[in-house]
Image 1 (cartoon, one colour):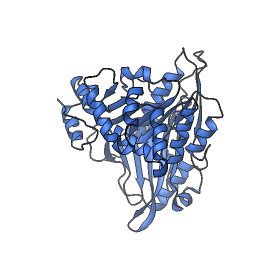
Image 2 (tube, rainbow, N blue to C red):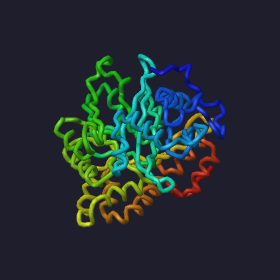
Image 3 (cartoon, helix red, strand yellow):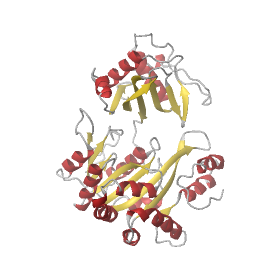
Image 4 (cartoon, one colour):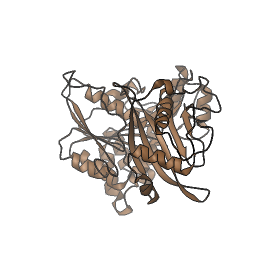
Length: 411
């Protein structure tokens, strides 16, 4: 259990150049793991999204997209190794990392009898000053499942989330809310009283547990079964999880990330056999997401697999989080494209190498053709600035990257 009186919370000034969460630093070679847990929970309670730990560096927390120092001195490698073993709950974690394996898992700490704080943990080997070490990144996971309203998903997409089969993709960079948006989509299915569904959820690791969505108490027949993907977890790979899911008669399969040929191939196969697949991918735009998914396959298979992919796609949403105008957290800028048969045909007429040009043309045509359900990042930015949810300066800074913006933006 966490004693909240022991937590030295972050300062109220979010612009403070240095923050110290712990009242006392761990002693050299004598880690106070109870204090470490208080550090993690304290950061989460004050709004940190990520916690970064490396040897020879001071700990950092990320607040509203900015890094803040969180310890007064750098950590030693034995201290970081002790932290990793504590999080992994076994002593072989460092051996696995040293063997070249990246660990993705979840860590949960009980706050009191009714509350727990969960973290997504990634541990990967790194080189620092010529020595092998490990970098640990903890993502703070909320204990409540977001709704579509919470994530600000555009209402015109609500009725596009419930097709009988096909693929819905949420794309974006790491840390920009892909899993949160997909969790909100899943919640909408679980709480839909007019259509009961079995959902198989495959995550690496599990971020949202949906414990707060008590379908039994609400007399809602829909339910979710979750499996964690990874070394020593429920299922070793997403591809195997998808293949196993198809034998479990679900209506919806959530795939935490389509990261390789095997998982993308399994997603397509699941769609072609009548399942709805929700998944995420790392990409810098819708055009890049399409290109990456198509080019997961070898050249000799790309034509056939690109056809299968395009006929399976229902919707791609790409998003990026930027600071809210009031400074309270971040809000999602989104571009999206709904794939009806007319839009699919335009892509199928050209090879995957030319899909970027088709995306640009479809977005341009959507400005004058109401039958095309699409929104560019520029349109999303204009709307949020007009609604005073973001500042024009933040949008202009984002525009300098050149990512995601099609056409001019009027602010």
